[in-house]
Structures are given as C-alpha cells and as structure tokens.
Image (cartoon, rainbow over all chains, first blue to last red; front, side, top):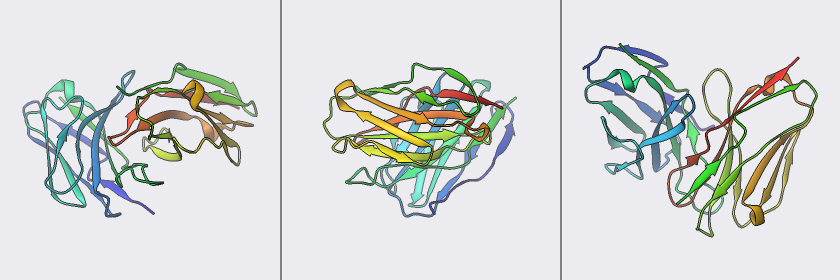
Length: 115
Length: 112
C-alpha cells in the first residue's frame, strides 16, 4: 500500500515563526504536491515537484517555499507564519500521468493554526 | 484552462436512498484523467476511482458506480442504498500532464 506520512497532525505556531511541514512517501513516486484546504475554497495547489531538486509554483505560492533534497521527502516551509496561513495542509505523491497510472495518494493532513 | 465544477455544495439523504454526485470538467486536452476522492471527518483524502479519457466504460464497485460521458464532459458518481458511513466530502478531480485540479467538493450527509 502507498503510504504518505505527514510529520504532524496538529500544529500551533506563533505569528512570525518559521514553520516546516514534512512529508514522506514510500512508493518511489516522482511527483509530490502540497495543497491547502479551506472551507468553501476546496483544495488549492501551493507547490509541486516533478523530481528531486525540482520545484514548481502552484496557484498560491506566496509566503511559502519548498525543498526536495531526496525523492521520498517534500518539505513545505512557511518563511514567516501569518494568521491567514491557518489552514489544513495536504501532501500528496503520484507517479507521472502515463498510461493507466495517474492517481495521487494523500497524507493524513496537518491542521496548522497560527496565533 | 482546466476546471472542475461540482455544483452541489451539500446533499442530505436518508439512509438507503440512492444519491448521485455531479461533476463537470473542462479541458482542451484529448488525454486526461478523472478521479473521485472521499474525505471522511478524519480528514485524509481517500482515492476511490480513476478514469482515463480514452476509456468511457462505466464502472460499478459494490454500491458505487461511475458514469463517464465525454459528450457532456461529465463524470458522475452514484451511491446506491446509502449508509451513514458514506457521510463525507467527495471531491472530483482532473489531471492532464499537470498536478490534479479539484472541484470544491460535495458534502454528503446520510441520516439514519
């Protein structure tokens, strides 16, 4: 079974702190993604990575950065946390969309509260 | 541009009723993938099904069935004889050679 593990289920941080959200997958997937989920807005893509050391901006990258030094790990960094970054963060991994393989598998989510 | 529309924000049904969740998508690509995910109260998105653009066969899996129609750009999901455990938010998603694009989700409440 594919397993995507996010380092924390719940996190409370103070405004201005640097926050690291870690995500690890065990299926040797090339692609990894970070989404945030907010009521009424659905899932919005923050950043994604097609392979090690590669990163691409998604729809809402402002205030975030990412790191992918190893294939299995994709980290989301909030450079200076703000209250409007309070949200549910979801990490996912997938193979490249080729043939019959394209689905993404998600971690359990990290609910981040910035106070 | 790609887009997924789930017009139903919330649906409430009584247990054992059938319910259909609608999904309409937009894409100019001829090769694409469609998905349904379930998000129970625990929060994790659970993959349910994938459909490729070149395979319009409908699918049935137990109480779940999916109707993919390219002519109307729709990929609808039906739950037969709904159960309380089906209560969740359901997301439809679209993918080309890109990350997944999600609809805003439909919250299904099944009342005993």
